[in-house]
Length: 355
Length: 278
Image 1 (cartoon, rainbow over the protein chains, first blue to last red):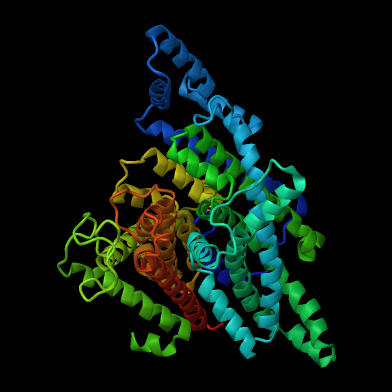
Image 2 (cartoon, rainbow over the protein chains, first blue to last red; image 1 turned 180 degrees about the vertical axis):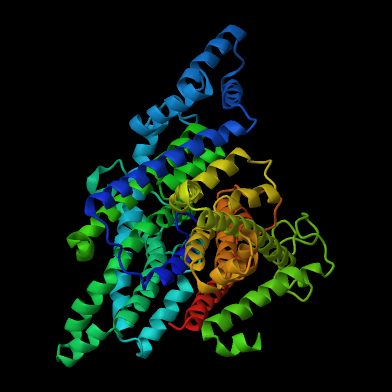
């Protein structure tokens, strides 16, 4: 799936485990990262600008057709005026290069993607901004929780890798982690919402009867989607952290700490944790893209009002401005979040800070 | 083969058995003559499990078992096609970058890194939603392959960088082999063992992406795949009508297939690491 996909994360992880952190000057590192960030966004946005233009369908004619179908036929002069107006609104006037410039300028710097077709004439960017907080909240909270819980369990399991409970925990994690997000969501929905009836089948968020009612319905609606994302996320962090801490626990300095007579808790919490957690911070940056894709799929299964559901609606109604807007924003958001995690990294890793 | 089995771990064995069972269903049982499972009203609607229809029939009178077999066949095919394209392109780009060096290497790696970092699902959604209605299996496979080459190419490049300093490559060079011969005869065999786990990885990813697109209604509408089967069952209210065999069989099949492939990949990686003496 997106970014570094889930199984390839395993390959990446298996091979990076024994690598020492690169020693690079701090400013060079940051500069390089920011450059990669800009290039990623630029190439991503360039791809999504040119792809629709390689397809034969003309969005303006489609849109005029849809408007006519809804409100009856128009006279040719009005139609021509509307066509020109729409071309300007959609950034389809002028040469390809001019269009490209407008697209970059409007989309990247103002998050203006033109009017949405399904909610014409409200701007797509405005509608996305009402859906975005739900996605950010759902995936953000479940990712952070999964990272904390998974690393904690993984550390315990790796530190006592011979214990039976560690092996059982790892087996469960290995069984859950490879399952696609939407299947976990579907199974939870069938079991807990349909068969047991503990949760509503579809999401209804009540935003009209005051803040307290809103928060209550939001929490109720978010539990199942949150759990389904948490399960897969936690699975990965358990698997990777267990493997990391198990190999760290065999290193000489840990053995030396044991001979010094330090308590097991101290060894686990300080010596093993500190040396294993660094890789997990980088892995967190790499996982953001996958989490976003997972969030899209989970939202669609539960009808949760985030960007995923919005994309699905937009696809059903062929609202390309909306699709383009959602995709541009998601590329920028994922690249930026990854950048933030990578920039924080040197502050956690003393080997980079002091060199 | 026997030696590999003997030296391998439990994960690898379980994964291999599951994967082989699925390959058998998808590419052997599939060819047993049967009625086209996609055609509506071939049989009576909503039958329960019976000897003629071990998994019952759908609300549209399709046999669920044969639909599942065809779904496994198509999902695996898409996965294998995408992985094949991705691996070939990835190995080629990786070797090219690793051996050419210089500006070509840098440019190729910037592009590769971007494709690794870029979120693929949104772009796949954009492309397939533009092809809505006209998309075919081949087209879908090509679109999915766009994101399958970057990861192998990164790995092959870093592998070939260390490879080209190895003694046996120097020996080959001094005994008069040219660069192409060195790449084909000396480096490629190594690259292929590394690529195998990437290949299986790409199969898993392609099947996952296809089923995600299917849930969004963006997979070709006449393609019987595991994802589309789940989506059709959801669309026709199989959950509300409690037709568990219909919705359950593709879900269970997908879960087993993914866990099996994942076990195979991780088991194979552990096996390689053990072979390298770590």
